[in-house]
Amino acid sequence: MIVPKRLVDRARHFMGTNLYETRLWLALLNHGISTAGELAEAAGVPRSRSYDVLESLSQKGLVIIKAEGRPLKYAAVPPDQAVSNINKFYEMTAEERKDNLTNLKSSKINGQLKEIYKKGEQVMDMSEITGLVRGKNNVFSQLATLLARSMDTAKIMLTGTDVVEINKFYLDAFKDAKGRGSEVKVLVPKNSEVGELSKYANVKQTEHPMTRGMIVDSKEAMLMFMDPDEVHHSFDAGVCVASPHIARTMDNLFEGVWKSE
Picture 1 (cartoon, rainbow, N blue to C red):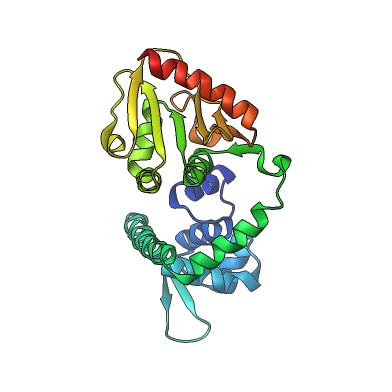
Picture 2: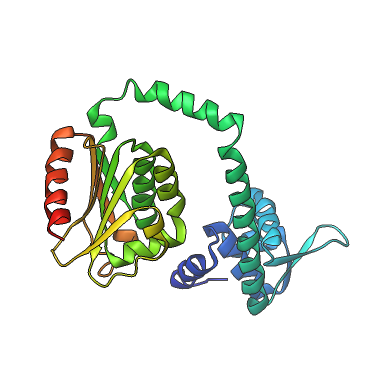
């Protein structure tokens, strides 16, 4: 079976499956019921990988394993049901991972990880903690990481779209900063929906043109290059600079706008 590459790519995108999973699932849709060997040949997947991949598809609710007889045979779940199944799988997986990570934060392991990081941080030079960050998730993860290092002040410039993202996924970072006694100031454009962020940060709206960025303790800074309303999230990017000189310069610019409002 020859499946157009575009269909494979689109199915991967929407289903969140990897290349081998997608190829085997599409092959199974076409064949109805088949053995792992037959599917591997039809999908162009190494036979040695096909069993593990089909097991993964089964866990996600895309494939039914026919237990009777040998060799095992596999049946495809109809597309509509498959979409519902995989959606539920991701929901359950996300909740389980969230619970695990919540438990990790209060565990002994987290303390050990922090100690390891502190030892590594002591030997890093500026060139090692200065670099480009690509993609929306990585940009916001870095913002949260910098915020977690703030002990005195964090000054942040955001778009309205950024604030929506923070209210959905990153409020804990702001809550933790406030709990440490770090003063967090946020500048956003006029008429932005501030939401829950105002509970954990001092937010001001401004009409002044701004770039997106962040300054932490007048020591580190991050500049984000793209307008999230104009580019796909995968093109979002920022640069982190561990330079007190640059951070203080940005600090002064930020305060100039802050005091004018």
